[in-house]
Image (cartoon, rainbow, N blue to C red; front, top):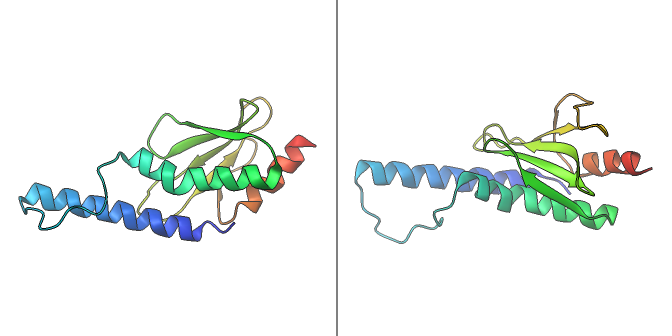
Length: 131
């Protein structure tokens, strides 16, 4: 699955959230109801990026893949059988770039960070990890 449409929707949501915050700070009242409900940035990233990617990986690999929130906003651990195998992170949600770090069996980073353009990158790594 190409991740560009997910990134585009995240970028639009983040921009809308920031715009709404600026409007409230300036004291401009809402004329209409806000289109984006008030949610934390981590939750928005989780719902628009991480969940679709995890669901796609589960379908492709026929494995139970879960995720865990990382230590800061935009960091998520991808886990297979309760073992972390990758870190998915979005350093700047408004920029529209998703990066991935693959981890070895001991949980240490084994490859440099890569720009995630397609979930096939993760699927290929998972297949090599499982075999």
